[in-house]
Amino acid sequence: MLIESLKYVTNNLRMVLGFSLFGVLVILPTLATMFAIVSLAENGVNSFSMILLIVSLIAVVLMMLFLQGYVIKLIRSRSSGDDRAPALRSGSRSGLKVMLKDGFSLTVISTVYTIVPIVLFSLLFLSIYPISSFIEYGTALAAAGESDIALLTEQMVPAILSFIGIILLLTLYGYYIVPAPILAYANSRELVTAFSVSEITSLLFDRTYFIGFLYVLLAIFLITVIASIVAIIPLIGWLISIPVSVIGTLTVWSIWGRVYRDIYPPSE
Image 1: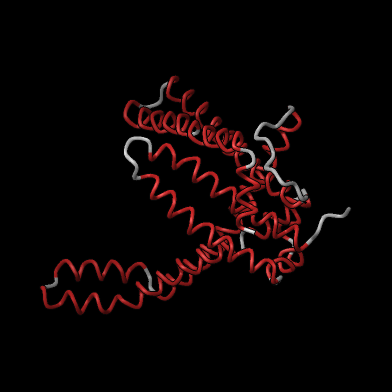
Image 2 (image 1 turned 90 degrees about the horizontal axis):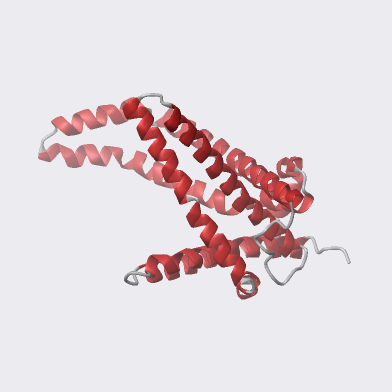
């Protein structure tokens, strides 16, 4: 599944290069946004900074929605049985609108499914270890002698381990749970499907989905190692690592698209 998904992406290297270039171009309006914010903070409200801020923010949002919309397009293509990643270009104005809509839907789904568990786990953690306890710890640590630092640190070990455990659970949740509603939406084209309990659970508790998840973890590990090695090449390493990372990211979504196809084979 991993090799096949990788070939699905690399069969369209023109798309990979275009996606990489588009991703790099997002940096420009992002820098413009930061410049406008700094200018407003230092010089007060002025027409140039306000216009620059508004235009650059709109550019960032539209470009990000376009890229996320392509991810949905790729999942849909892979789930339908295509053997080559679709072109990056939308092809028409209506196609562009669909990609922007899909990108917005992906943002909504990811935000809802990410924020809710973060808030719940944060409330649970803070109910056991309130912020005041960390303030007291910091105050005591600042006034403590060398002999007391080890004792104070030992008292905070349960809180530290609990925090690390929550981070690991949220990471596992993000890799395993969040793709399910995205797959459901990509193949139904209806946002409500992403929040259907029956649709989501039918994916999560399927053996094929779990196997796909293991392939995803393997793909993430390999692409992280490869991108890190490539990035240390003098001068051009960082440049090469961009398309490598893009290939890795799209391969992950290609795997998920194949998983959906195996669970729900397209009708002939």
